[in-house]
Image (cartoon, rainbow, N blue to C red; front, side):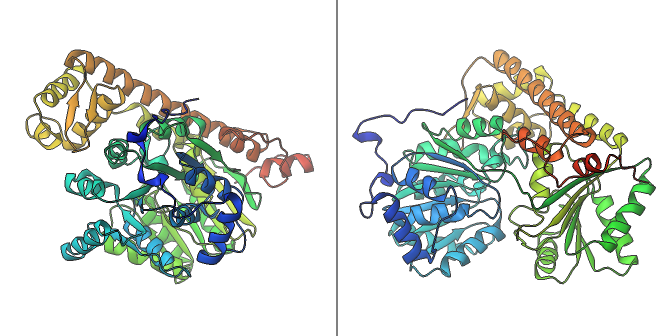
Length: 506
């Protein structure tokens, strides 16, 4: 398994993170800071080990379920290190929640945010405070680091810790891929490689390796917590037709404890199922990426506050959502991977109380997923043309303007070229071609085929989960690399085995 680069030795490579506010004093000092400055009487499993790793100057990757207190890791480590902690977080609403949370703590540490939603004057004041050393924490959206001036402001500040939240967004092998995350590795290097913390809730070994590689993490400590959520009852119901599936979903939602989430694959299904639920008298909402940002925010707030019993949503809903009392997560459409399925399923029962996780399954629905996995051809001659334009100094917008390719296609081509090591993104945002354009095109085309193969393999794993007659929890946890042996006693297959019957759903 890739363990990242080795941190170079010598005075020149020392980063601000290696300057401590006080001698850490090991575990005793960590507990003291947690208690006195954050009000924590005790630390959760994995938190102390991660904090000690960071304050010793070691890059660290933490994979822990949502709700396990990952944000406390960088908050405590940040207080124990001289300088500012930069936190890259993908959602503006999540950044605000984190800043507000820090403001509610007993300590007097200052936190601020820079994003596209705030006035320019407010951003300038935040930069002034950063350069003056008045900020303990600075939250940024990843796209902000595509601006050379932002990176330069950070270079001139005393950055002690660089945190990448939702770190799985950096890799297409996982889920929720965000292209803006691809530039974080070069930015970390441009800042002199402060100690780096990457955190995520779910990641297979393959995804963990890519996080380490793409962030350029140096000999990192990789701390992986348990993925098991024993309070979740896992179930798959099989259907012969879409109408049958919809009728059963409406019945199950009607009689289920609430609140709950119904995940669907399309915007059309989100709106149609919400309407069907409303006809029964339920207060339900739909959520998808086609809505305006203001509307999405209002819908999410209504669900979080309890104004709506059910939200029907595409995978656009979920990141940063931490509602403890969700009693069910139903998937009306099958997910494209177990990574995304378990991430979404994990939004149920975060209060530790029993919750239901059900997949409404028709084998025919897999055909759409399999078709999607095989689409997206990138011709070598177009990749070569893009590589030649990069060699001439063109950026993404110039390439799109100078070809018959859409900007989305251009970005996809550039990602493949970066994957192949043919193009490197510089800290100022410009691109540099590393090898001959024709050779670059061949390598990028090969990377694209690897990606499609990986997508098909992930769908096959999802299908195997739906079809298995064994313990579902065992299958899921082993997929994520956790050594677990069933029966768990809390899935449909184990229940059927105990009664000696097989369940048929109609």
